[in-house]
Image (tube, rainbow, N blue to C red; front, side):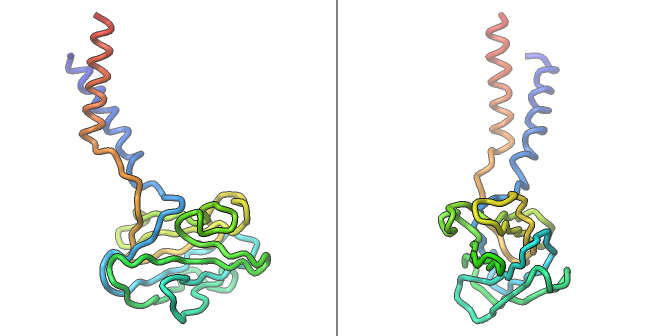
Length: 181
């Protein structure tokens, strides 16, 4: 195997690696990463409908956290203290339609579709959540209510390790060379 082919395999590995990282997760479950306070920050909306954001589980008396048409962008809200590993389930109530949609697994929603996207790589100290507010998936932009949180993570699809990708690249080159001979 030539040095050029090894470099090509390494380049392919490096090119594919970013695709496995930092991808927002549709329907990702949201978990507290370290015991302590969780703070939410309102990031805005693109929705025509009026949505109210709630912390659905664990049960609490917080009420409306953000209203997408009346809350100023940048407003923060202290959700309280939680134990590491606690799942936080958020809900938006759409005032115009009377529908409620939940973060996490699609089975939580009446239409069987995931309505929230989670990005744990949003910033160094916060994760991003964006909701879709229309039954049946709407326009699938997941920015009808947008907010970030400190101290949360999500369940993620396991990513292939860069060494595994490199090994697969070398295997492919070896098979191609064998076929060429």
